[in-house]
Length: 193
Image (cartoon, rainbow, N blue to C red; front, side, top):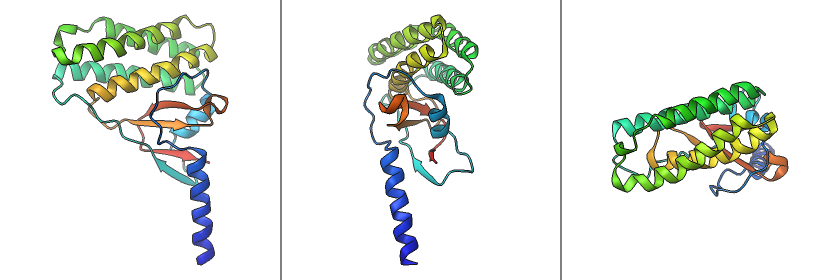
């Protein structure tokens, strides 16, 4: 029994060392390996250890229903892009990015409270830039580069406004050729194999 506990603790320490999700820093990313992202975002039955990712909580307490619905739509298209990239589908990622830009362009900024406008404008501008770059990218690797930055700014937008459900911020130091990457997830646990 004592050896079982020690063995389990050794596996847990190695698993936590391999994918430490405590970091919430926004760093530049070069490329994202979708196989690594899929493994980290999946909750497949083949997992040996699960590590909880931090839940994103909103900064603004009073977000209007219209603004909340808009942020939820932006997040929905983020996940559309993410799932397309995990599936190696560059064309579908472009569609998701185009849909995201359409939702953003139709939003009435006057719905934002005065104290929310600066945060919204800062992050939505960067989101638009990287969504547009995904559309214009020549290949899926270029899309992944911009998706990494899109993840950072979508995280910041959701952190400010919320999204009406639990969203998690995952980090894996092995992604991006061991440079590390962050992305958003709808599942509470990352799988370490």
